[in-house]
Length: 319
Image (cartoon, rainbow, N blue to C red; front, side):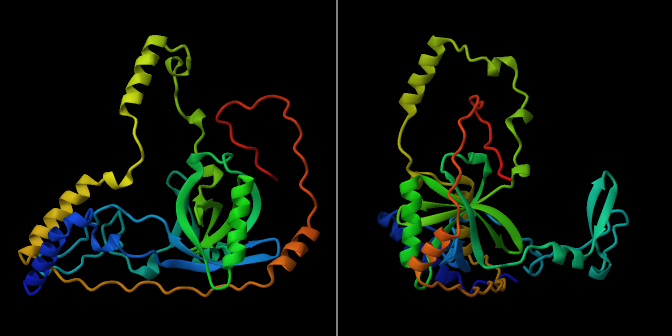
């Protein structure tokens, strides 16, 4: 139910907020939280294991509107309802099906789903290194920060510098939350970042676009091109992310502050967070590198291409 006991405290909080505007742009409490490790394991390539922690590199900028019962301000959940009869269905009567053809489903049991899930190995398994500009941007999905864990700092720095000096990124597979992901690892200043990639079948090719002749024709009027370039030059600047704000979010949160300062507050019990997972270990780096190199054949040199690839084509997949 509505309460006003925290009104004075909130009002003081808002006063403090506005009195500190000269110290820089205000950030909501959740924007100041340090990155928390969501996964612990090891980067693995050859016989080398680098213990690392994974933390999210992004946070949602959406305003989450939770459903509440207006009479008691209690959370409102979802019911499992039969869409034909409108009746609520008990959990034990619900099965999972994959649509094979329109209106036709194949039922997959929980045991079959469990067996199909990849084993959670707690490793980021590197299987190849490719040029950093070889992977198209539309393959990129979610970025994560990688930080060395325990005694992994030296070998972590070695991998980072190796990627930096060779202009390569590492391709790897990793299991997060029971889902297997394709990923790349690349250096980022003093750290490394892991970006999960969309599987090739998830990305539509440019041939899925209906581009007419006016778009494909490269004979652009020179005068129009010069005017367009001048406009671009006039509007050019530098990337200053601190200048960009989500106007909708700021407007809604201002309303939240205003109503909260009036005592219009509903208390909802927070959900408990997930615990951290155990870390991997590492042994002597020099010996592992020697053993890894000793068991590998030199990479075969690529043959000269017979013809130039068309622009936008994807690199050929390895068998």
